[in-house]
Amino acid sequence: MFKNDELYIIICVKLNIRIALFDIMKCENCGFENKDTAKFCTKCGAEFSNGPETPPVETSTNNNTKYIIIALVIVILLLVGCIGYFMGTMSTGEVQSSDAAKNSSQNVSSSDDSGSSGESDKAQSTSSSQSASTSSSKSKSWESIGSYSGSGSGSQTITVPEGEIMVKLSAYPIKNYATNHLYVTGSNGQSGGVDWGSHSDVETRSDSFSYTSSSSETFTIDYYETVSWEVEFYRYQ
Image 1 (tube, rainbow, N blue to C red):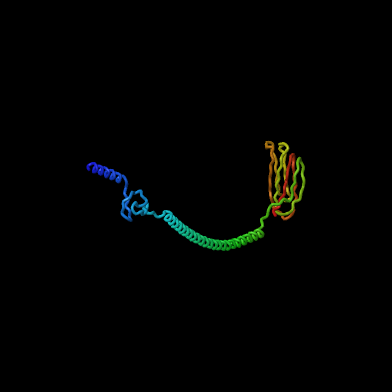
Image 2 (image 1 turned 90 degrees about the vertical axis):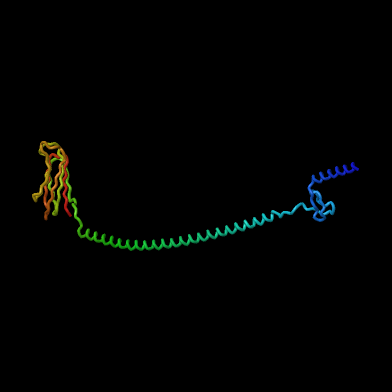
């Protein structure tokens, strides 16, 4: 009897140890305890579920993607609207500034036209007054009426018309003999000339005189021992 009891205890101990080695899963249908690895209940045959089903991740991911796309579209539309508004405002300002610039340029051009017309009138009046004064008081000038030249020694007589006359003369001697000269003498007593003394430098000398006569005059040009000489007559007219 003891041996049987001992054997029973040993079997129970072994069974307890074996049972402890496995986790127990209770059947929801009949309450029977099964191994956690069992797919069906050993007593009633009910099927065990592997665990609570997790909702598909793809659905939430797809929903999130849709929301992100909608948000991006809204942001893009807002940006496009803001850009269009600012562009319209800028174009309106540019048109207004362009109109203002045109108006100001027209005003300036009109003022310039009026100023230029006034200046043109002034210039015309000034030029007309200058031309009138020039024509009325035209300045006279000395104009040549005869030029005579030669060399060596000799004399010649010329006739000079009436008026305000100026005579210019110059000569260069051959040597310094104290007798080299060039004289111009008129019938009215007007005269001029150049000569060289014994100690004078051999160089070109010149002289001039003027007079006014109401009739023509006769002038004698006398020259002696000259390399070159020249006499010019001018009338103020």
